[in-house]
Length: 601
Image 1 (cartoon, rainbow, N blue to C red):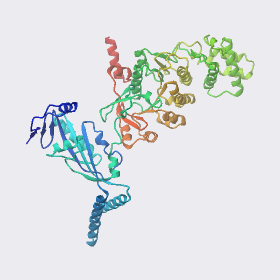
Image 2: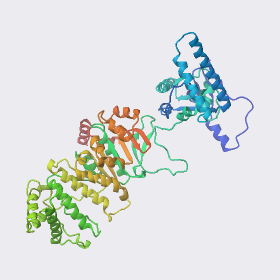
Image 3: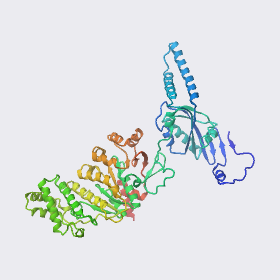
Image 4: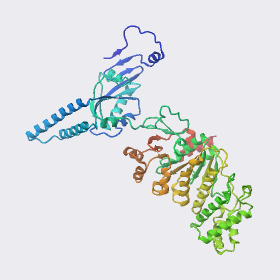
């Protein structure tokens, strides 16, 4: 039987204020009551009553219900019980338990474990109540599920029951009482069902929603955020995950995932969306994954190791007029020579190198005066020639050790002036064509050029943000100079309006070293995608993951992950448009489709 309830009585007076107009516009035209559901306006609703609770609960034990991806109204009605009344009820309850125990003992029966447990709990609660540590409350918990059709409502109620059962919560439908149930879950502070359970302070406090599946919104009175980029969709709540790394305490991020989890895809989407925000990006790309993206947006590509590509390590920073610029270039050359030789030269050779550096710049007409810094810089071959003409045996020995890099097999990268100026809104340093013997040196040159662009005080647009992306960072973590650069960049980047994005699949190289842990601790934005079972323990300890987060990262699909920033954390699924996907994907099938589309054009 269905009942159609409408307001009856005298014709109400015309509304005379904005509140009455709002209520008339928002209230449903009619409410249709059935035994199994309500039809409210053009939708359907059903109320579920919580009738069974778990024996023990932890913090935020209602989270599975609050994060259910659908429209769900949850109402928690709380009535405090006066202390004398609570104490009297506890005494009566304890007397019943004691009577049952004595009766069983007199009849020679074994003690009932449920009665024993309940008696112990009642005694403990009575003691805490007497000390004033805890109080008792009458609590009613009700859920109203909304859907567009009756079939969708039945399916939604089944899902809510399953979510409740996952935390040992038992729910029952409010059959024939859905209208009182609906009004109970409205913000009217009225419990029309009166199906309550006694709880103490600890259990009640743990019921409050201390966690959320979504990132927190600005507090009332705080200004609304107007920056950030799209990270994806929250699979738990279907909400949008929008994150602004430039609004955090530092601008660094770290992305950890196993191979094939979609980390480079996610980072390329982030780079593309940062470019929309006028951020200047530099990428260290060991596997040529960012070249197609750079071509699409008009970026600069420096293909180290390609024929005709030269880098002169003796170049001075363009536009840097600080008085110590020549000294800093000399110090970098000391580091470069140590990397070329795979060891720090002996003291005599270091002294000869220092003399040669100053002499070769003087020969080129470059001094500490900034007015001379526009002149062509000398080459590495000129430095070796000055060493050979020094007259010191240590200098001649050092020149001989540099021969492979000056005139030998490895001279192709240094035997000419710099051919490509790494400047633009996106600069990609490609390292794939470098041989293994030159990979470390090329990486050092790329990092030095990136740091010069970040640290240059005279660069145009001091307010421009800069992002440095280091993909496959485990390759740099194995190299001492690369690890030092990541550490320096993570520490000093914020003061220069720059952020560092570290992307790696080798968790051990990052979390197993002091420098790696320092990089992680200085990253306010932390992204975890699918993890390997062998690495999940280290990741869980480093990032304080819960058991559910561990299981989620072990079984996550491609592109699904966890965004962590301080106490805020949320799951997300990276999404992209068709145009973004074609620039970020590395799947052979997608690349083949892209080739077919270009051929058609």
